[in-house]
Image 1 (cartoon, rainbow, N blue to C red):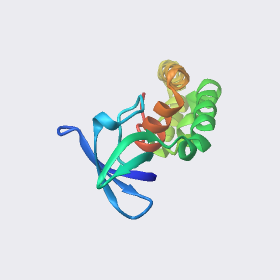
Image 2: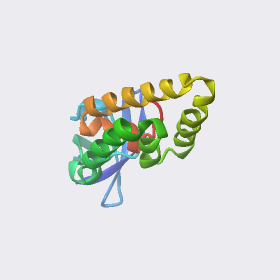
Image 3: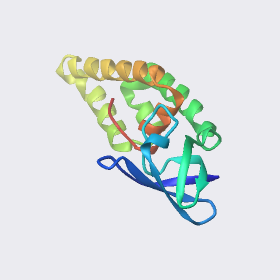
Image 4: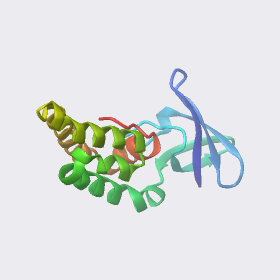
Length: 149
């Protein structure tokens, strides 16, 4: 059955999934079968047993439509136009994109040092984006909206 994680309690290592049938299912993190820990908002595929969810997997069909293209496009933008914050704008981080753009442009007033730092940050993010798995990238930067590194 398909569903969406509503809540995850890290201290009790349990959570709740809203199934596509309209019912809610409790789960234990030990039933999680993906490499990335579960987070609220993740789309999942699971087996229902009473009011419990068993054998929970990330719904690759729901996330594969945007994960790979987001990852590759964001990485390329970070490499070629990262100093201007293009990859931040692409991922929906407008505030961080403007910060990178303004620091890069006004950095030339201060002998280019801030501009070089922004270029290095963009290159580090390029490397990070490429080294993340598609699931990790989708979870961290698209679903959880982590703006920096």
